[in-house]
Length: 381
Image 1 (cartoon, rainbow, N blue to C red):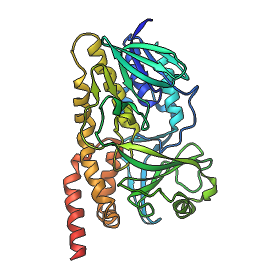
Image 2 (cartoon, rainbow, N blue to C red; image 1 turned 45 degrees about the horizontal axis):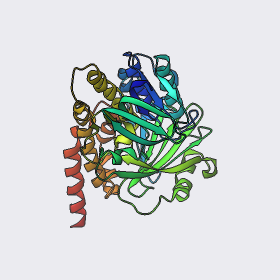
Image 3 (cartoon, rainbow, N blue to C red; image 1 turned 90 degrees about the horizontal axis):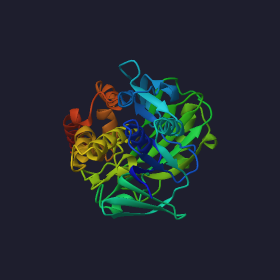
Image 4 (tube, rainbow, N blue to C red; image 1 turned 30 degrees about the horizontal axis):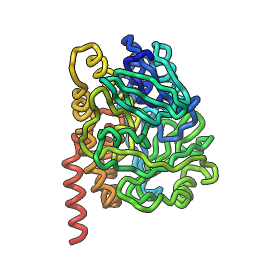
């Protein structure tokens, strides 16, 4: 059996991103994908245009909408609008188009693909990884990247990622027309979802609709009730939404993302923003950084992959640590949070800058948390 350089479990955004960067540096890489072909994947689809810096090819061909304004509301009223700076700071894509596009780029660079490869066992023998599929197929590799999303069983198996994974409970759907949602405008609704928010992001003649709750919540989201309140304001009937519920891993503390010859990327690494649920940017960043670390390791320039965990902590985790703190305060006191954290003159612009990648939570967190806690204590006295 031929031993390849890298096996990647999962052909989504993070896995395909890593595969492209590895293959473009002449590494022998194979994606192991359990599905036959990309399926429609409803999610928010928002991503900072700054991710373009991670790739030598243009991403604009698969961008459905360039967002220039972000509209916030509380129970469909009390609306404020923030204008995004820059030429194209925030993009909306169909997730299935992004995944397929990145996979094609990886394949065109020399990556191999094994479809219907449902991984059921991963073992390491003499520094070589042996990956076995449900149908008995096997592949051997020097390194392995875990990129199979929020439901991945492998982080726990290899004692990587957060010791206690934290999940947001979400609903994502799509409507096959635009209603009265303004072009180039993303909508965030903070009053209708307990411990979370709802969103509407425009696509080309369609709209991505969703909601998420981010604090510990044992009860499922009352999706239909929220849709009945949220969608009429956008010119839709709730019956128009086609979607599904899911659990989404979110960032929950600094943790080890690598072992000896193994890395976690994307949702499998619990990188999703715990306040605004942004998952695509960290998926693409982690794919890029994972590939870079593995290339150095395969070329003998470093003797371990620890640099990957360190750079993800620096480039993403430090900001998410503050994002988690903001989330815990904001969603516990949402009305106060909306008045002070969104309606404050400078606040919408700051949130917009975070979405566009211009700022991190670390830049604003201490002031925001202090303001929210002080105001909540004052209202009780």
